[in-house]
Image 1 (tube, helix red, strand yellow):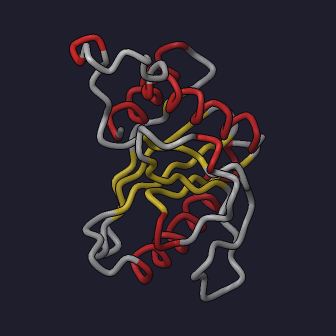
Image 2 (spheres, one colour):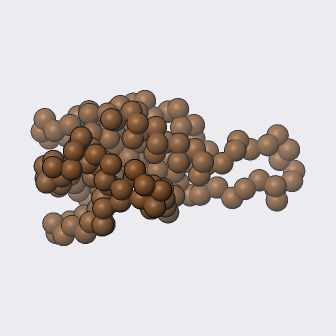
Length: 166
């Protein structure tokens, strides 16, 4: 399940990044404007991030990458200090409550590592349903409605989230 999610997220990032720059640097109008950042998934899944104070293992870490950086440099284990969001994945919708519990624990770690952070993003994937969450430092959690990525509107909404974060 993890490789499919990682591949999908990094595919969207690659499309947002656009084609490689052309050799002709004189014509600046032809080169597309790059987004300020790309949101990519670390290729290592189910890992204990650096800076963890417990034995918790996040499913997938989402990190910010410069659009000029190669997406191939995502093979390292993430650290809580550099995570943009945590993605928690479960095989079925019946495990959604457990996924939210784990996401809250990981978000606590994010806030402990990134002390100037105002809010954190989280993504819960259970089967084909996805919820995007905004988690505040005061334990406030705002979750989106269920996005069913098995349908075109659900995939579109999830892709829009990834693109808009970039």
